[in-house]
Image 1 (spheres, one colour):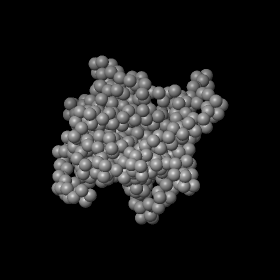
Image 2 (cartoon, rainbow, N blue to C red; image 1 turned 90 degrees about the vertical axis):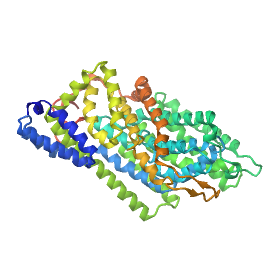
Image 3 (spheres, helix red, strand yellow; image 1 turned 90 degrees about the horizontal axis):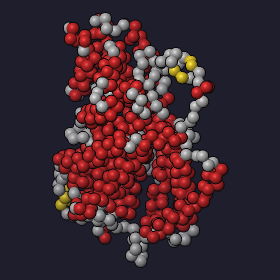
Image 4 (cartoon, rainbow, N blue to C red; image 1 turned 180 degrees about the vertical axis):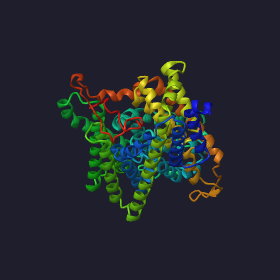
Amino acid sequence: MEFVVANIAPIMFVNLIIFLLLGFPVAFTLAATGVLYGLFAIELNLMQPALFQALPQRIFGIVANDTLLAVPFFTLMGLILERSGMAEDLLDTIGQLFGPLRGGLAIAVVLVGAMLAATTGVISASVISMGLISLPIMLRYGYDRRLATGVIAASGTLSQIIPPSIVLIILADQLGRSIGDMYRGAMLPGLLLALSYIVYVVIVAIVRPNKVPALPEEARVYIEPNGSRGLKSLLVLTVVAALAAHFGSMHYFSTHPSIPIDEHVVIIMMLWGATAWVIAILNRVLKLNMLSQIAERVTFVMIPPLFLIFLVLGTIFIGVATPTEGGAMGAVGAVLMAASRRRLSWTQLKQAMTATTQLSCFVVFILVGSTIFTLSFRGINGDLWVESLLIDLPGGEWGFLIFVSVFTFLLAFFLDFFELAFIIVPLLGPVADKMGIDLIWFGVLLAVNMQTSFMHPPFGFALFFLRSVAPKEDYTDVVTGQRIAKVTTGDIYWGSVPFIMIQVTMIVVVLVFPGIVTHYKGNEVKIDESTIEFGVDDVYGSDSYGDPFGSDAGNAFQ
C-alpha cells in the first residue's frame, strides 16, 4: 500500500492507457478512471472531498467555451462541401491538367487533398472521396498500388494540419492559445508537407517512371480543335488576372503600408480569383472564345472553393472575424455553393447536420471525461509528477522536445488524435510553458506529430477509411475492360511507410527551424506594460490547463 500511495499518479496514468488499449470508449474511460481514483485518493487522504465540488463548474466552463463553437461550424462546412460533388470536380479537372505528366495523377491527388483540407477539414471525407474517385483511375492506368494508396491516405491527412483543421481548434483550446494564431502558425508547415509529398512523387517519376505512368492520349478529355491542350490560354488568363490583382491592390497597400504579409496574400489572391472569374464569365456570356476548354474548366471549378478558403481563413488572418465567425461564414458559404450547383437536397442537408451533431457531441463528451480525469490527476499531484519527470530529462529543453516527439509518435500507433489531445496535451502544456517554450509552436509540433497517428499501421484511421473503399477482389475495369488486381491490406500498409517518413522529417524541420511557425508573431499587438492591471477571473471559466477550480483567481491578467 505504501508503494501504491507513493506512485498513485503513474499507476493512474498507466491504468488509463491499458483501459483504452482494451477498447473501452474514450470519454467513459477518462471519466470512470478519474472518479474511481479520485474516490480512492480521498479514502487514502491524498485528496480533499471538496475538490469534486468544482466539477460542475468545470463542466459549465466547457459548455460556455466559445472556442469550441468553431468545431460544429467547420465540420458542417466540410460535410456539405463533400456532398456537393466538389471533390469529384476538382480531381477530374486537376487530373486532366497534370495527367499527361508522369506522376501527374498522384500530384493531382496531393493538390486536391490540400484544397479539401482547407475547405472540409474532415479526414474521412477527404480519404473516402479520393479513394472512390482517383484510386480506380490510378489502377486503370498502371500506377503502383503502394504509391497510389499511400498518396491518397497521406493527402487525406493534410486536413489535420492545414487550417481550418479541427485538430488545431482542439489543441488551441487545450493549450489556452488563440485559434487564429494556431492557424497562422500551422499554415506554412502544412503547405510544406503537401509540397514534400509532391517532391516525393516527382522523384519516383524520375527514378522509377514505370510506377507512375502518364495519362494516355485517349484519356485526355479537354483537347482543343487544333490538337493542343490549351495550356497557353490558361497561362495567359493566370498572368492577366495576377497583374490586375497587383495593380488593383496597389492603392490599398500604399495607404496601409504596415499591413502584415498575411493580409497582402489574402487581398491579392481574392482579387486574382475575382478577376479570373469575371473574365471566364464574360467569355462564356459574350461567346468570345478567348479561353480554352481547360482554362475555362479550371476557373469555374477551382475559383469557388478557393474563394471560400480565403473568405474563411482570410477574414481570420486579417482579424476581421474570429474563428467561430469564420466557421459560421464558411458553413453558410458551403450551403450556398452546394445549392448553386444544384447538388444539395434536404436529405443531404439533414445527413450533414446529423453527422455534425454526432461529432460535436463526441468532442464535448471526451472533453468532459478529460476534465474529470484531470481533476483527480491534479488532485493527487500528478501534474507535479509529470513536471518533475520531464524537466529533469537530460538535454534540457531539447531533451524534453525530443522525448515528447518520440513519446507522441509511439502512442500514435495505438491512440487516435482525440485521445492524444485530451490526455497528454493537458499534461505536457504546463511543462512546456514553464520551460519558456512558445505554445503555438509546441502545438503545431504536436499536430504534425499526431498527424502520423492517422497513417500508422495497423490502427491508422486513414488506412481504415481507404481500406473500406479500395477493391477487395479482382475486378474488370468498366472503361478498358481489362482485369484489375485487388488492393491488399499489405499494399495499403506498406504504401503509408514513405509518407510516414516524410511526416517524421517534417517534425524534425519544425524542431530545427521554429521560424516557419513563429512567423505568426509578426502580427502581434504590442502591449504597454504600464497599462496592465491585476484582477480576478470569472469563477465559472476554466484556465488553459484544467485548473480544478476553473480559474487562476487573483493571478490572471485582465
